[in-house]
Image (tube, rainbow, N blue to C red; front, side, top):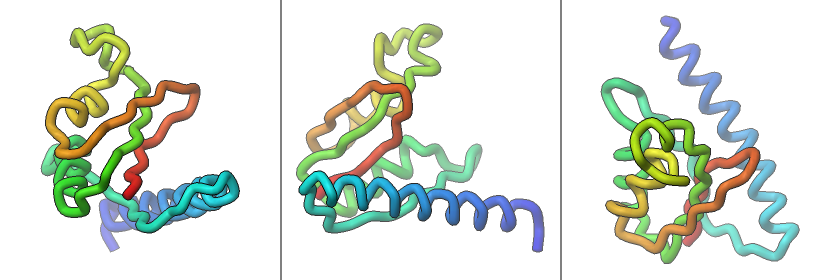
Length: 110
């Protein structure tokens, strides 16, 4: 098995474990979770921005809750949004709620 395959499997496993934990937290708070999926981009072949946007187009959720780390914000003029959250607010065909916090991830809610 090549290194890329090993890394992809490890990334998916870590993502699935994280998704399971936050799904339980959301359900404990009374949020109805209908659909979850770990999405993996493979730069430079694909960008997380486009992978997320395509998934949003496919699923047509009412709202997307997106975290913003803003690592590129000061350098590229994104204000308080990061490049991914900025891209989603301008290109995704759904309502986007951006939440900044110490640890943020992107969630898609139907």
